[in-house]
Length: 433
Image (cartoon, rainbow, N blue to C red; front, side):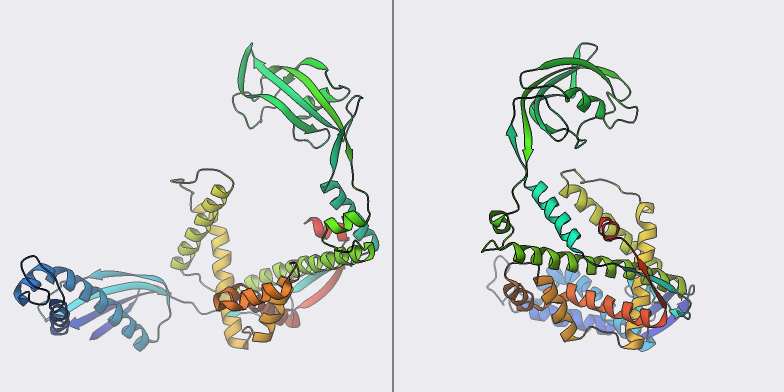
């Protein structure tokens, strides 16, 4: 095998490779002989087909397989000999299968991984949110949980804010019904903002059995383009008005949250523990985001186009899956690469920088670190031990935990170099973001 390499740019390379033709012919013959021992053809017993017929029938297919395997094998050998780190998929171009020199020749064009240079991180500033869970935060969370379990009980009075009105309505434009303008027995909680404010305001003060006619002008930027900016007439009937009733903060409520004996102290303890875990994650996320920004700003690295294009493809596929999960048809949907280019560049850049840091400073995930992360994952489930056992039953399930530990190690390393400033942040502000 003979090789030669050209530098097409700072990252792009072209390898020219030639393999003796007699090696290829020998492998083709070997495979055909092996095939002849088992091949079945009409009119012949298995293994008794003449070699000439086997070669005529299967020769072209076997030759293509041998050439493909030869390209892969010889390219891998050439890359090892040249000590190259290939980024992305190479582009192969075959020359003449039988050149005058008696060699099979082809070229492989590809990019290599770039050198990553990191500047001094001592000038980087990382603001770490500083806050803690208070008793009031626990009570506020319990109130939210109560509201999530609200029930509505019918009342004989007019509807007010917070009430549920069950309505039937018909909307018309110039006397004709329009798509989406009709509903039957639709529950609406006044104040939630599910309907246009001008529509919802008409329901306030109505009681069960009341009907009303009114006009409503849709906003110019309304999502329904057929009615945007137009004035429609609505006929509305209220069939039921119901007032909200929150569950009592008692033993039954505690049991509904998974506290078997209904102990309110245990319930508050569980809520506090969950809040503290979530708060810890939010703080870590904010710090990690700043660390990654600092790494990108301090790094000098040229991004291989092949890796960016591959990442754009992954992001686009993820976007399609997300649309399908929302019930939208994404089949055949063309998403412009520009939509994902900046995000792809950031991901590729961070991947290269983090890989270099991990290698240079031995920041690989340790087994005990992975175990700690898995156990933390498991705490949000009713049977943590079973969850941990599930993760360790198949090694590939640990990939997510290992990646998280690796990121944590990188963040910890950067925080030792950078200037970390604790910044007081209200609990609610941090949890909303």
